Length: 295
Image 1 (tube, rainbow, N blue to C red):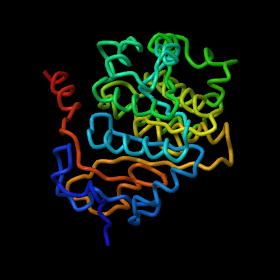
Image 2 (cartoon, rainbow, N blue to C red; image 1 turned 120 degrees about the vertical axis):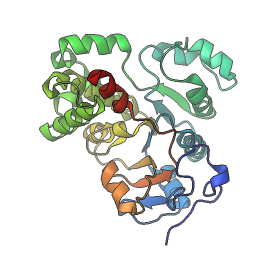
Image 3 (spheres, rainbow, N blue to C red; image 1 turned 90 degrees about the vertical axis):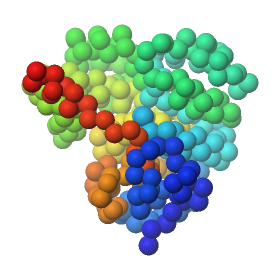
Image 4 (cartoon, rainbow, N blue to C red; image 1 turned 135 degrees about the vertical axis):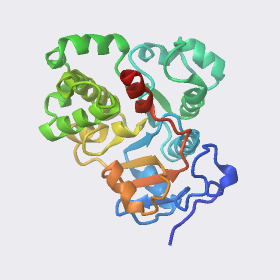
């Protein structure tokens, strides 16, 4: 029997427009694809040193759930670090100027938030929530570093402890990332030309893992691919801190006609919990790209 979530299981509460009536919308399942109560997920978050939450960036319900999880985390583990993919080298030296009393406008100004990039209207409230009893932490590498890495390649990372886990990433992980990046580029570029982007992805994951590793407790907010247990940040952190208790949560959109929870488990890969929600506005990015190419 499916277990709907109180306060989130009815269509009138959803912010995302697609598949609000889907039978799995609002359901949490565990690693076996079996329904699990929210209280169980929250209990594991409260007792795990490291927690990972994977989102779809444009899903408003994912961000609302993240706000709840951040609040719970900081209530159960005060002072916990909240690490964001959306904060990088550019914001890292500016974060110390923030305080829990800052308004959203003040946070945006102090972080010198760029006009292009991550939407502050979405992530600003999560940053502010993280300052209410927690420590806000930048997890990602910056654009300038990414450009240099694209040109110079993996040798650039040698000797920097922040990226030690990149050098030990195995062939299976690299092949998976290359396949994923190839598909994300709509199979329109030769696969072997995308190898520099694999190194960039590995460097991003290593950076986020490094930002978490030395914290007494840390919660990561990042895209679902970054939170994949075997190929993303959790795998890097496992190398750095083996044996530490952790919980991996994937926030996922339901798919029309797909009512078997195990299909979602397989799609996202191993995790401890999968929290299923309606979907954001549907858009086929590859249709536009291939259409222009054909024209």
